[in-house]
Structure formats: C-alpha cells, structure tokens
Image (cartoon, rainbow, N blue to C red; front, side):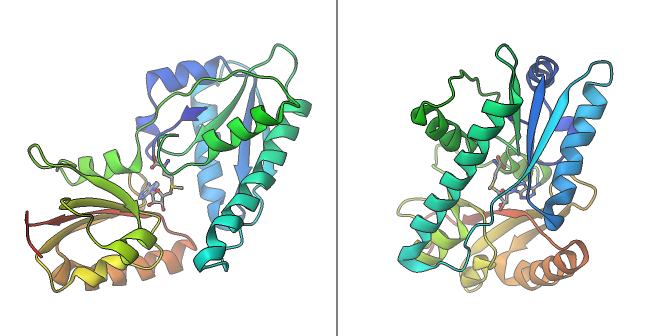
Length: 253
Ligand SMILES: C[S@@+](CC[C@H](N)C(=O)[O-])C[C@H]1O[C@@H](n2cnc3c(N)ncnc32)[C@H](O)[C@@H]1O
C-alpha cells in the first residue's frame, strides 16, 4: 500500500518510488467521471517513474456508496460499501496477481488518514481465501500539505490538535480543551457556524494541483469568499476536495 501524496507529484517520496519500482501490478479503483482526474494523476506518476520497465495496471470501478443514508443508517451503508470493495480487492488479488508477484494500491495522501484501504485489505486477509503479505508506505497527507501551503503549524506550542470530519464538527463543535481542529470530508461548509466567534480558518482546495485555491483569515471575513470560490470551482470541475484548519483563540468561546 503506497501513499502517493495529496495531489502534487513532487510529494511522492523516494520510498514510494522504490516501492512502485518493485511492483508488477497496480490496482486502480476508478470512481467514475468526476474522479477521472485522480486516476490520470496516478497513471502519470507511473509513466514518469516506471518509464524503463514493464508493469500492468488493473482498473476496476469503485462500488457506489449509498450517500443518501443518513443518521443511524450511515454506518451500515459504509459497512456494505467496504464489503463490496473487499470483494473487488479479493478478486483482483486472486485473479490478477501471479504467485510470486507484487501488487500495489496507490493511496491518496497518507493511507493512515481517513482512508479505508487498510481496513479493507485486512478484511480480505481475514476471509482467508487469498493469502498475501503487505507493507504500508506513508505519504504526505492533505493535512500536511494544507498547513505547509499556509506556512503555519498544526498545533500551537504544547497544545493539542484534533483531526475530524465535517459531520462531527457540526454535531460536536470544538472538542473540550482543543482550539485547533482540522476538518476533512466536509461537503457542507460547516465552518460557517463559527462566523460569530473568534476563529481563524486556513482553507485549501485541490491542494498541490494546478487548480489549488487557498484562503485564510477570520471565519467571518473568509467564509463568504470560500463559499463563492468553492461553488465556482465545483461547477467548473465537477468535483472538489477541500480541507481546513480552524484556529480559535485559546480558551475563547
Ligand atoms: C477520503 S479522505 C482521504 C485523505 C487522504 N488519505 C490524506 O492523507 O489526505 C478525502 C479528504 O481528504 C481531503 N483531501 C485530500 N486531498 C486533498 C487535496 N489535494 N486538497 C484538499 N483536500 C484534500 C479532503 O478533505 C477530502 O474530503
């Protein structure tokens, strides 16, 4: 499992390139029209770093996830989707990989952060129908890329930082004792809820790619700008990936 960074081909580590060069078969899961750009980026990386050797690419369609399921139905929908993915991984490993061959999943950002590939591979292993071993190569996460582009840190001196989802931020707000929160997977711009508080936002979309957009400042001032830029970009490209850091004055409410 190879972390490939969050969009900038320059974030591919030497370790990742070495692992790619030791790979016979690359498994790519295509998420349809909207995510064709992400598959293209992976293919470009392979063409750049493996130009002198042969390799195979196996592309599969990612199963659709039931995003309509809200509330308590959310988790079972995610569970079904993981199992459907595990079926595909199992089949790909069993059918596309020779006995002594090495396969690789090129995982966006860092495989350790809000990515299901690790869990799915473990599920496949537990089923026991195909035997394999694997290693994980860490990647530059979108969180690292975000704060680097804003030239700021994740935590303040001796303070904690929390990474969470848009859904949880909306439900729980800032966690107890934490004033720096990184928010991922937020389709609903939940930062708007903090416009009346003393909170700064460091926002980035398509970080590391030619479409990158960065905005920072007090939420009250930055939010309308982010909303406009986000809507325009989403309309133009058909998809968006954005991440942000919310930073509250320590102890502020
Ligand atoms: C399924 S998670 C995968 C995260 C990935 N494993 C990582 O380390 O960044 C997808 C979320 O990551 C964030 N993300 C990934 N790449 C990004 C990028 N280039 N720019 C902004 N956000 C990004 C967005 O919050 C998106 O909703």
